[in-house]
Length: 155
Image (tube, rainbow, N blue to C red; front, side):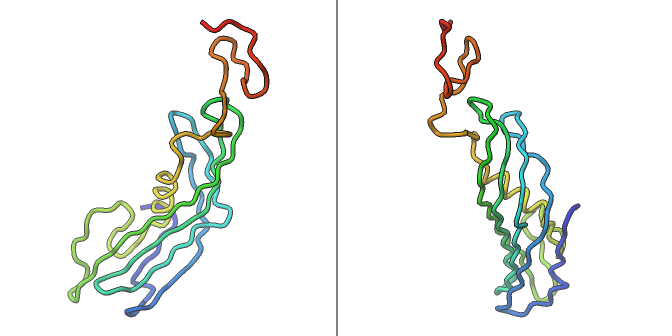
């Protein structure tokens, strides 16, 4: 695991208690259809940990901006993304039990960076568009059909 990590054991939470913290995380570009989009977390990622019966409930939420080209016309676009992810970490009186495999939790340590990236990737739109009504580029001459009328005869 790399990046920002949170050790649940260090929190020393009792039943019903909550810990919440905002983490500053850098996110590597996300590729959609072979095109990379920069992802920015201007306000960080908020992670809350609740001590519940049988374990810990870890929630991550973040408001991000994805910047890259429109899938139709290639104009620069900035898209708002609301990402949320939730993981349950079970416990038992004798210590940690074998939990379902998750790449975000190893023992009692949560990889906050990986959890945030996964949530952001899942929250990204399938196609980034400058507008739902974007007309794209002419397949014949490449003119941006949102800005001008094409004069060529499309094949």
